[in-house]
Length: 219
Image 1 (cartoon, one colour):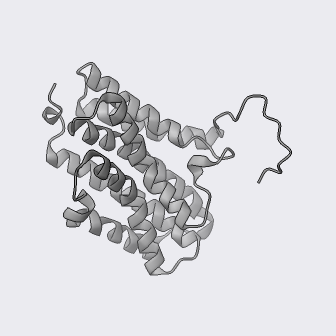
Image 2: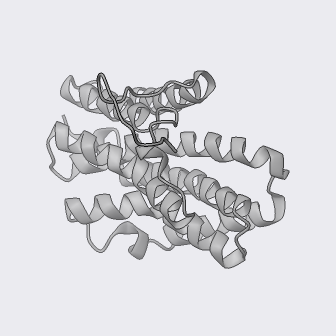
C-alpha cells in the first residue's frame, strides 16, 4: 500500500495546521490562567503547538523541521494567541476549555504524527511511538514552562497518553491491513479525542505499582 494514496502533502499539511491551532489554543489558555503577559502567551502557544512535531521531524530526519520551513506552522500559534488574548473565556471556564482543546490536539496529532513517521520509512511500532510523542510532546513542554508537573507523569491525573496510544495503534493496524483511509484515520483521531474526554469525565487513571507501600507523603 502506498500511504500517499490517502495522505497527499496537502492533506497532511491540513491535519498538521488543525492540530497546531488547537494545541496552540490550549497552551495560550493555560498561559492566561497562569496570568502570563502577551509574550508569555505566545511562547506557550508556540511550544505547545510545535514541540511534539519538532521532536518527530528530528527523529525521522525531516530536517529542517516543518516548523522552520513552513511559515503557516509558525504563524498559526500566533493567530491562536490573538484569539485567546482578546476572546478567552471567563476565568472559571478556562480550565475546561484548556482540557477540551488539548484533547482535540491529542487526537489529531497522534494520527498525523503516526502517518508522517510511516511515510518516512519507519516500521509500524516506531511510527506509533512517534505518533504518541507528537501528540504528548507539546503538552509536556507546555506544563514544564508553566511550572507544573506534566499531566503525562502524574498519577492523580486522568488518562492522557493512553488515548493517544489507542489512536496511534488504530492507525498502524489500519496500515497493516491496508485499511487506512481518510475515514479510518478520522475515526482514530475521534476515538482518541473521545477516550480523553471520557477519562476526564469519569476520572479514569492508570494503576500505580502493585501492592505499593510508601511512607512518602503524596502531593
